[in-house]
Image (cartoon, rainbow, N blue to C red):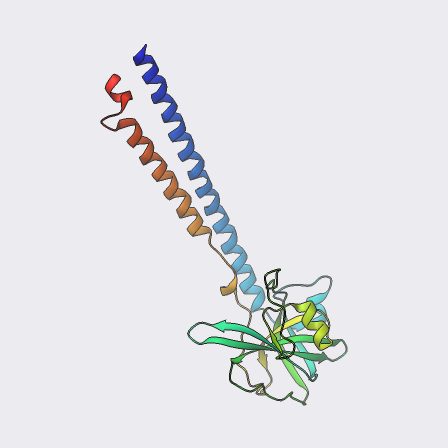
Length: 233
């Protein structure tokens, strides 16, 4: 009777051990598939970012194409926004965002690039310019984002709709990549895939590690020297 009971316990622990490890390993395999999908998506985005620029309307019609490379011609309107950000090895910086009146369209936001906190903001360029950049709609503002300090003109996220209201522009953001030989007093911070998270490899390794640990722990409880299952068997 005791032997039968011990065998049942052994089978139960084996089922739990193998079943749990199988589930954890399957989650790891799923993350590997997600990794392959994400790498393909990042390659596609990288190709889109570096493609030949198109007129603004072509990037907006029939629908807004995030990361679409566009060329816009017109003049900067007066005004700007400083958005607090950070650059690795540099520290706190300001993104400078300005309204740009596109010929035949209207004003849009242009993220011109970054400058150090202590650098003065360059005057608004008055000449007609041609800019190359990428459409973007960053999802940076949430319920935890501090409200902008309008007195000091410091913002804490690229909240496109609110910035557009402040600068009298459309809800369209172009992140500058190149300009036609005009010094805007900033260093361009173009769109790239580096800021798009891809943690699926780490997730996969975590699930596979948990599956291995699960098996080891199962073996430990089944075959430990003082195991009632082994002794009574």
